[in-house]
Image 1 (cartoon, rainbow, N blue to C red):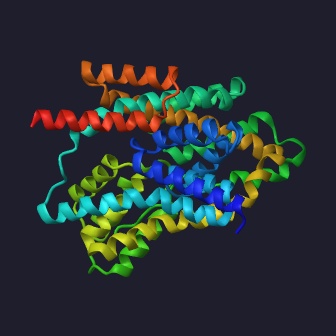
Image 2 (image 1 turned 90 degrees about the vertical axis):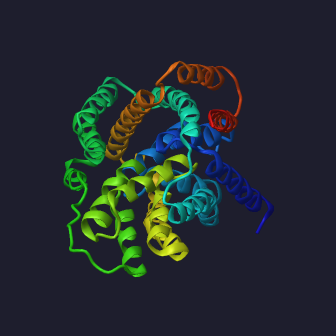
Image 3 (image 1 turned 90 degrees about the horizontal axis):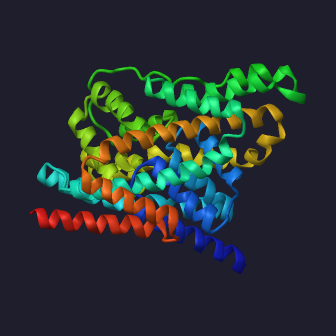
Length: 382
């Protein structure tokens, strides 16, 4: 291995191991943190390339922010980079989630983490806002993409599914701008894109096996569109209503564990896998939920640079990017409504916004500062 390739692998490992240790706040925050680290600071990709990668993660199944980490790792260091970056991103949250799951199965409850969430969320809001403004300048290219972004915000607040909005926005922009020199014969292929999630049928309660659990998580990983927060609906449909292996409260506790640890929310799968089958269950659940994403990223990577060579596909990606921006805006609003609940939280948000917008302080250090602040408040309150 030559020295340049080795240096790239080390850089990929360092970036995503650090992100896996510090990236609190869910998928929208992860996207904002990735943008800060790999576009602004390290210039691995341009803003337009970054937006295209976001758009691609939105139209293939799997956890979006993790797929973005996989794509960026692949871009920087090839096949080995995909593996090294992916494992570096997932491993910290996996270790922390397993520790939480061990405590949960032993004591029947999660450790008290409310103060950490209280402090981290205002910081996350500031980070997402900066990314929204910066990416918005690239995604909103004209009146039509601006109108699509606004329409997606309104429709998502009314409860329309993410997948429908993403594909719908892409199709609408193609129809508005026209198919260009590629001709209308491409229309059928585009309109054949999936517009909604496949249904999950209920089943009678069956005996637990590690193999059945693995293939159930593999199924979820193959069907999951949108942010990691959609995962709760899949978990409830499969493991609570379908197989009868978990209670709804256990699945909610699993999602909470994913929220209070940095890194991908989809590592909730390993929490529930541990509850069901101990350490082997946790590892198999993690493999099942992420294997489709690794595979799809490897398969789709060669075609991403060619997407904009087809005029109609470029229009489609512009529509998806505009919709992604709208969905990020909705998540930011919802997070702000739930987080800025009192004057100290608002004050923390304002301080964070100042540091994020007007200083060059690394965002991960701002998040870590909030974690320490939250832990301090928790200790003082006890």
